[in-house]
Length: 191
Image 1 (cartoon, rainbow, N blue to C red):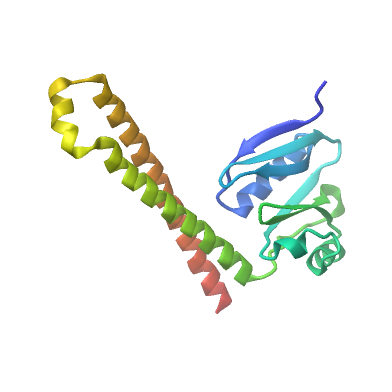
Image 2: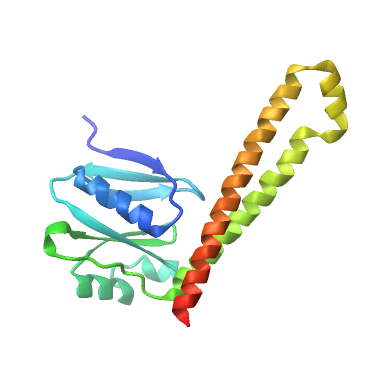
């Protein structure tokens, strides 16, 4: 029997990732590993009887943060009584047993959150440009009249592909709006 469960997820912010990890813990699963690529991450869980509250923080100093003895990790584990889980994909994961008291957010500095939000905004803008350019490349306006005249299946395939690109571009615009809003909120907090 396989005692390891894996889920592929995408999160737009730390709060939703933290709440999902905490919900998984309430269902009886403890986080073992996070892997993945640029947008989609794979979360590995194992069954566990203990319930945890998870916190995630951005990490701007990857090589330093890999160590469990880094000053930041020691600060969080000592101050909150939390357990260091891992450092992956630019984020540091902590957990604390739910019955051991409150575990407030561990965001260390507004500067690190601001840098992370700017990075996500840049990713959304780049993907928007790629999808927007792909819309025009897919439709091929010069050949549009020919496709309409022939009513070929290729025309409908191209229209479907263009519509998918429009939806993806709209998702990127929504993400960019959310990240701009968060950047504005963080800058207001920093004043």
